[in-house]
Length: 64
Image 1: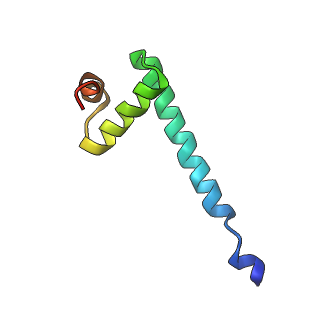
Image 2: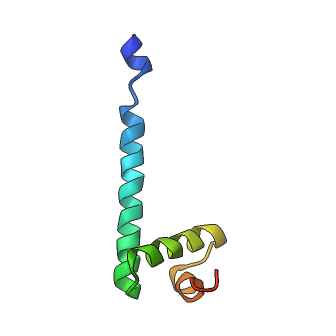
């Protein structure tokens, strides 16, 4: 029973899946818009924070 209390494997798998999705989205932004990793991460943050689509976020990345 103690083992079940400390079994966090499901949480780790979910975190890994989210990280993979985020990495894939960042890679896609880098390829689509010729961005480096830092720029792509910033664009992703702008998209999430302001609810913008990719095109708008890329255009506004230097302003925001």
